[in-house]
Structures are given as C-alpha cells and as structure tokens.
Length: 328
Image 1 (cartoon, one colour):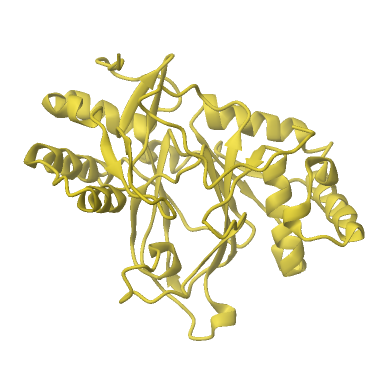
Image 2 (cartoon, one colour; image 1 turned 180 degrees about the horizontal axis):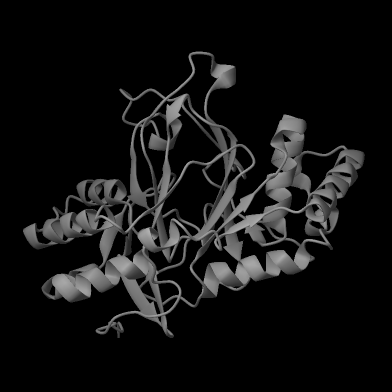
C-alpha cells in the first residue's frame, strides 16, 4: 500500500532559496591540496592513455579529497540535497582532462550511468539542436528549460564556458514544494501519488510512476511535465482536468517568489544535486555565433551508494544501465 505523507516535511531538505542567497555554506571552494590531488589523478590517467570512460575508481583515487567527497555524498542524501563545488581550474586543462576530472570526481561519489541509448557517460550541454525539430532535447538548445528532475539518483553539471548572456541555473527544494501543496492545495495531494505515464528516451513505451512517493521516512520526487504529457499522448490516456490542475499548481509553486535558488555557473563550477530532493531549471540565453565559443557544460548522472530506499510504486531509474566496477 502507498504511504502518504500527510504532515509537513521537516529537516534540511526543506529549504527556500531566499534564505540561502546570502549563505555560502552550500558552496565548497576547492583548496590548493584538493586541486593538487585532482592534478595527480589526471597525471595517472594520462599515463594510462585511455578515454575517461575506461577509468576505474582506483585509477582516479583522491585520498586528500576523499573525506570531503564523503561529506558531500551525505549532504546530497541526508542534507539539503545539493552542493556546489567551485574552482576546478578548467582554464588550464585540456578538453580530455576536463572530461576525466568531471568523470573522476563522479567515480568517487557513485556509479556513472548512461544518459542515452548511445551509452554516453558525459552529456555535452550545448546549444547545437534545432528548435523546430520535435526530437531535439531542450538541453541541446538555448531555450528555457522548465523545472524537472533527471532519471538518476544524482546529477552533476560542470560549467566550462558561460553564454554571452542569460543561462541562469536555478534549483528548488521538492520538500518545500510539497509543504506548500499540503498547506494551500491539500485537496490535490492524492493526485501527486497517482501513477502517471512518463515517456523516456529509448524506451518503447512510457512507464508508470507517481510524482511524489514517501518511503522509510524520505520523500522522493520525479517530475518532467513534458515527458508526462508525451507519455499520456503515446498511451492515448488523456490527463484528467484534476491532473492538469495538479500539474499547473506544481509548476506555479516552483516559480513562487522566494522558493528558488539562482546561480550563474562560472567556469569550473560543478553543481551536484539529488534528483529525488531537488528540481532544476535554466533560463534561456544568448549564445556566441562561433560554435567553439558557445556555452558548454558537462552533465554527469550517478547511481549513488547511499541512495534512499524507493517504494515499489516509485520504480528507480538510473539512466540506461549502470556501469559495474569490481572496486565498488
């Protein structure tokens, strides 16, 4: 039977962006010894002469950074659900080193998972898509990206180059949204626990999942309205007026003043967040005409060792199959 949380969620996972704008405790600025640790790992990776995707955890050991990364993993699962790592010196790294550093940090947190049927382990978030093509993914354009969660325990976004203007990243606490629903739209609460059809790239048919699930003391959220609407269209099961109202309320609450935490990612910034606890978005942006100078981020999806237990009605999904490492 589905457990429904009928009282406000408490704890550090319930936060409002307005409260954190003047608080930098969610930012970890890399110190010189930690950067030296990453540099040493990159030197070992170069000597192996292999692509980043062939690296194993033992190939990118970060002994001086390990304790901090353990704390970050705990913060992702049991704290606010997100951390910004600042100061990776991407300006002096080659493209290969940047990819290896991003992937290597991920290896020290969890299992990297494939982001599409091609098996890509690092997604390149760039404005290279055609907005007139319905098959174009929004992250491949410069268009506004609505609040959503990715199909993995955790996502990471490493900024390499910013846009000419715009491209503001934004996150919202799923727990704070939930509490707003409880307080002001309690009559809709049960709708969010209903199974919705979600379309997923590469799957023959949409899968069922609720938007919210509560299991063993933790709330989990899964939301991407575009894929819900597409999933119901594919299955020829129209959304009911009540379901549409619930989706509209959800979207409105994510944009409620004070809810979101905005950040303009700088080169070398790596935002990491728990997809069950945090929704993320990005504003539209103006890009460079030169493709080589366009806004570029690397995206990482991780299956975490310490991930929360999910209810049977809220099936876990981590990309398109996790990698297996003997050392993990």
